[in-house]
Amino acid sequence: MIKKVTVKTIKRMKESGEKFTMLTAYDYSTAKYLDEAGIDMLLVGDSVAMVILGYENTNAVGMEEMTIFTKAVVKGAKRAMVVADMPFMSYHTDIPTAIKNCGEMIKIGANAVKIEGCNDHIIELVKRLTECGIPVVGHLGFTPQSQNLLGGFVVQGKNIETTKQICEQVKKLEEAGAFTVVLELVPEESAKYIHERVNVPLIGIGAGRYCDGQVLVCDDLFGKFSDFKPKFARRYADMQALITECATKYNEDVKNGNFPNDEEVFHLSCEDAQSLLEGEKECCYTK
Image 1 (cartoon, rainbow, N blue to C red):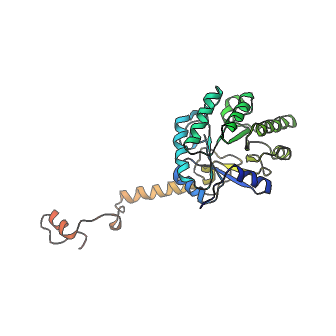
Image 2: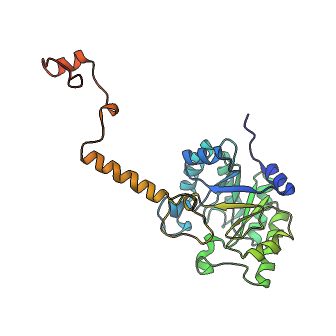
Image 3: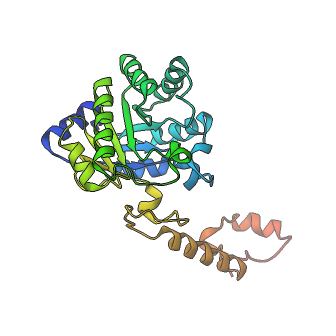
């Protein structure tokens, strides 16, 4: 029986010093392959808005779309913990609505939810969600849903004051019940400072080598998304080139008659083929 990654698993890995991994996933087959590869956590990220749906930013995706993608990932994940990224404005207005929306993700099979920020509303929400039995992943540093306020994709914690502010925010989320916190676009030294002063596991994305885990958008990892390449993302393949090459070959084969070939079609029996061809003496494929 496959042992599922849980909140306790992540905490235990933190305590033992074992690094853990998170990748985004948006569909059944990708989730299945990442799960089989041993990835510990699958994030159904609101990055789906950009890399899958073609929107300009992550704020364009809503609950209905995120629910569909989360359902698909849940079906493919047997071992990995599935974390549903709560979309923009799905948890910002009031606590009851936020709890309802987060609860819907758990009902369809997600094992945890991720929310951004650390204001009074967020802290209260994390407490309430934890009381309801919903595990919460925090997200600090650069928070994509606030990019209009932050002025775009801007590195956070670039000085002592702002680093200490982020550290205090991590502590507040930890006290409220978050079991891990994502740090995005934070200088490595700042992340190290924070890591040494908190107990909650930290997941880095563009936050250097001192976090307990790392997360990347799978389309960046695979080299599939080509609109831009983040500095912190390592490409392990070039799926853009592979997909283009395959599609080009297919296009050529269809147009020059090389696809499908005889091994890729179905045939009638010789008798039926002869009858269908109105008395032809032999089947076309027996000549």
